[in-house]
Image (cartoon, rainbow, N blue to C red; front, top):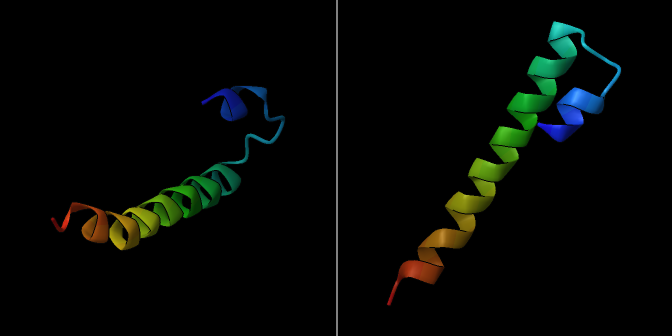
Length: 40
């Protein structure tokens, strides 16, 4: 959110690509990291 408010680029395609990429990376990391941590 802070980056979005401070970023001078407000092109909808730019915002959509980077939010999808950020969300996808976060989801992938959670998918790979959480199962081994919660298997106990």
